[in-house]
Image (cartoon, rainbow, N blue to C red; front, side):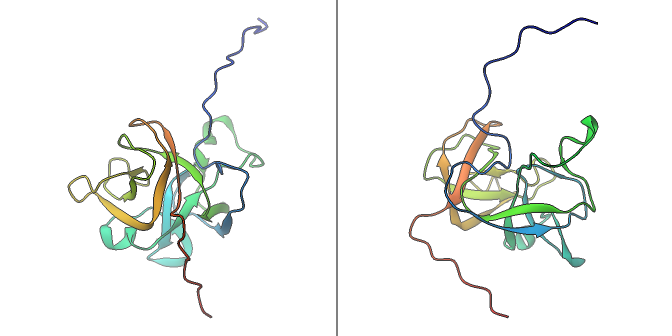
Length: 166
């Protein structure tokens, strides 16, 4: 058996779905109805409100609830290290700065759009891409990223989110 002695010392600053800083964040538990990658933008499943899934239309994307959080404590086989398998509970960041995949090049302060088209579903960008993504009014890009790289999104400064009533 060969022993590896050289290890990469260059790491990306974040993992998809990682809370990007030490500030407080809000989260909720979710039960995916499909396999969900880390850092995916999710909605409540229209066919089962107790579950979460990816948006497939602009109307669904308007019901964005948060981002699937990267969890180090999740036991997974190597082939399952993509995110959360369907039917296993996960954490969804609903408020806070979180690392996500930028489908287009983005700059700090750009608006955030959730992609609902088949290609890139659940990722984020800074424009509607000919009606393939929905604007998330209260979110903005907090850290720039090149297309296909990891950037950070978060709630816009001075925004007070509505409180759900029971």
